[in-house]
Length: 186
Ligand code: ADP
Image 1: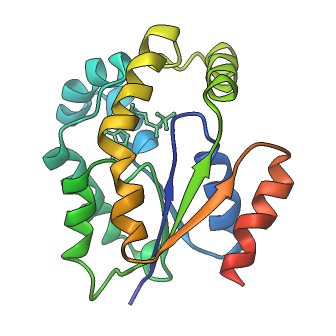
Image 2: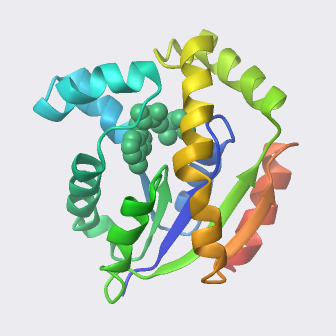
């Protein structure tokens, strides 16, 4: 049995930064569906061709494709000890797809990152400047926030009903936020 830990939160909340640190400290796989999709785009796969414009606009890639990609990734040897899911699930159908894996890959904990919108916009625009990420633009940010509120935020209730949610105040020093998450893994 390999436990899954879900990092949930709006774009720019710092899920990726914390997921990397937690995964390396506790020897868990770090699965970022955003990173995986960007790799598909840059290597020009069929999935990458479909995903490119959706990513740039700030829209989601269709559930079926992302679920397939994720399920395949979970078969990897490095998931044996459990994994951090960073950016998945992002919709109710995606969350339900995990329910069917409950025997092999139960969801252990869900961390909901909370950051106010002004801070998020600041962080994303800064990241865009530093990395040149093509979806870190003002136009795409607006869409991503709307998509988050409509499609992803309902997952907080979904996992609250299962008593799996830990709310993380994700404003402040990276190290302090890390400590507030890592204590749940000890
Ligand atoms: P952020 O959290 O800052 O939006 P991510 O790297 O997690 O950045 O995601 C970037 C983009 O990748 C999303 O806007 C979306 O287009 C796509 N994506 C990532 N994960 C998923 C998913 N689970 N379902 C659908 N699309 C996804």
